[in-house]
Length: 317
Ligand code: GRG
Image 1 (cartoon, rainbow, N blue to C red):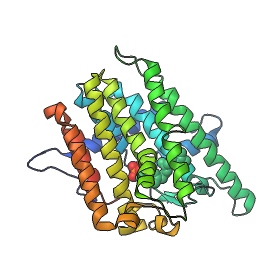
Image 2 (image 1 turned 60 degrees about the vertical axis):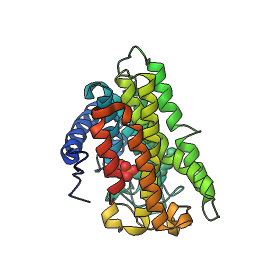
Image 3 (image 1 turned 135 degrees about the vertical axis):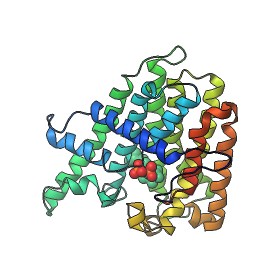
């Protein structure tokens, strides 16, 4: 799929390559504007925040947020602070996930992970300094997400309070962090399919779902539209993680830009481990179909969301 992200088909003649290039450039410019510059003190911290944020992530969550706003008749510029806030939370979670006390990974987005990049030497003290800086950069990005989100305007149906609660709940101890805890506690033991779904719903689907819901809220969407976006985000989010599990065992580290085969090495529960590769592929396809169905109320306006869901199903990294 790399280099052929166009998902145009007779049913959806949509140029996703062009869409993602435009949304990524818009989001990158906005993130650059929102974030303190590398020259702002403490300079090491601001460099450590910017380094992983601009290391070449796919920017799928912001694209989903902007596309959801469009589907509800909204504008990119109104959704942009929320799209950026979600990407900051996503990046913080990756920085922390890569730390030695969690997944202990040296490679992310094809580059050294934050704690490796900010080591001050190869001895224990130098490594510890890198870990401390990565921890703080993650903390700062998480906090910054709320600072950015607070700069959006309020809409008749959604106040700042609604927006901030939406983000706090998705990133908090009952969703994103709950998923990470369940993932850690599941390592090295038999995990049931039900437990695995609990992990994937929280670790991955919660933030993707939050991204599309925020996009809808930025367009002052109706309760019906918000429900449709929630169904879409949930199913796309779950499909995304099932595919991530598949890619971990079918792709190389070079293609993924992160260490492949880590799930097996860490004895992590994954869909391929529990139900096998073929069944995992069909589960991902079923989930994606449910996501397409959720888009029906938007009729022609959800072409970008539809194309993004197709892309997520076919991605190779
Ligand atoms: C709160 C520390 C903490 C962790 C939360 C997000 C997370 C749980 C762990 C990170 C690793 C992981 C497998 C996350 C699941 C979601 C996922 C597949 C993230 C990768 O998303 P992509 O592919 O990444 O969109 P890029 O780099 O393209 O932005």
